[in-house]
Amino acid sequence: MTFGDANDALVVNTSGRYLLQAKIQWAIAPAGWRQFGIAVNGLFVAVDNQNNDAPSGLSNVTQDVSVTLPLNAGDAITILASQGSGQVATSLTFSEGAPLAPLLQANRIGPL
Image (tube, rainbow, N blue to C red; front, top):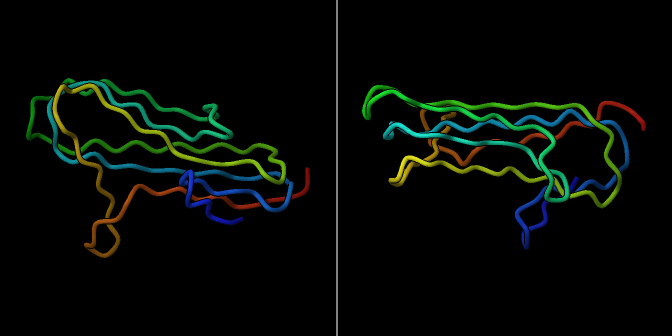
């Protein structure tokens, strides 16, 4: 697995069956929809859609997705996130109190 900086993607080096996991935490934001997912070669393979009807300031919204599927050498794995609150919504994840970018993991779990 390598990171393709030009397209912000994990690129598969060895064909096989992979477990893909991704997570995002949206900071406290106005009500509205959130969509988060994993894409392979630009097509969603796992997606979570949420409608956050809570008033602004009540809580963060966390979304996580996972999928197991066969991938070929050269496949590009990305995460896609969008929201429709009508305002800026910030994504947060935390590791020992430090904010990080959204999480994407890819683990080869066997041959094709």
